[in-house]
Image 1 (cartoon, rainbow, N blue to C red):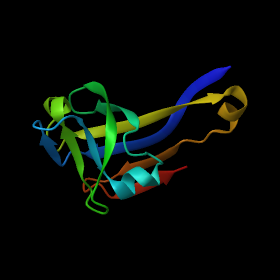
Image 2: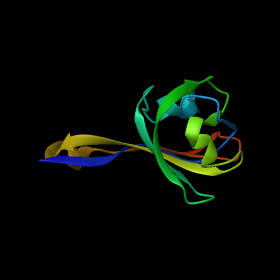
Image 3: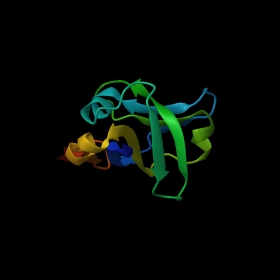
Image 4: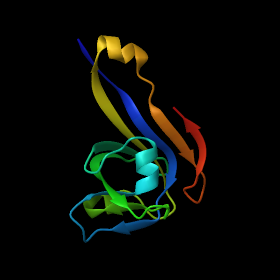
Length: 119
C-alpha cells in the first residue's frame, strides 16, 4: 500500500514579488527551499493565507539568502506582495516508511527568515 504524506512545508512565507510575464512557477530562495528538501521543478501545493486561494505549481530556485518568494505566470494573479503563503510538497511512500516519515517544516518571519524549524 502507498500513502501520500506531507514531505516539506514552508509556513507564513511572505510574497516579495509577482511577475505575470513569466511561464509559471513559484520562485523560492534556494536556501529556504533546500532547508525543507524542495527540489527545483518539484510540484508544490500553495495556500494563500490572505485570500484563501490554493494552487499547484512547481519550484524554481531564487538567489540564496535573498528571502525571495515570487509568484510567476498565472499564479501572479492569485496573490499580491505581502500576502502570506503556506508552501507544501508531498511524497508517496509505502506504509512502513509512512510510519517513520517526519516532514521538514519551517516557519518564516515577516522578512522570510527562519523563525522556527521542525524536522
